[in-house]
Length: 169
Image (tube, rainbow, N blue to C red; front, side, top):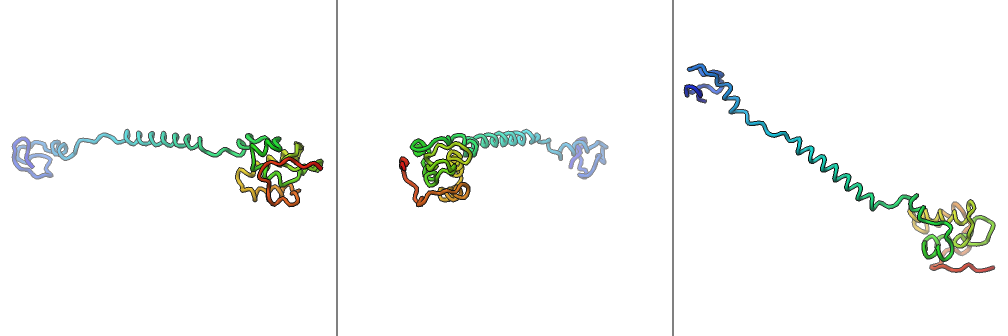
């Protein structure tokens, strides 16, 4: 290392030139310490904000396609539908309902055509069937309805494929 004043060689650890007495510490510190780099926090802050924004957008996008909750789907079903309108709008409900007699014990109709709206009546059973069909397969729904309400029709192993008018007795 050279002294900036006299130009003579001095040891790198020297704080002063041994020949002229000039301080070399300030020059050596300036030369050895590179200029400070810009802080990187704005880059990190930008990445965090962008990540949060993308997360919010993804969450909102996924909410649009999320299956409706049981309460929302139940609101779309009208349990007073029966007969042909039920078969046309909700064929799976009609197929399951056609396998059961109305549990009200006041009529001899099937759940698919009965207009009982009392407690444990046909409307309640149709609502129950609709809710179960949102999460279960038909054979399992039939078992669950039979377990809760009973009164399955004799020979109801094969559900009718289309709506059939009830037979008059």
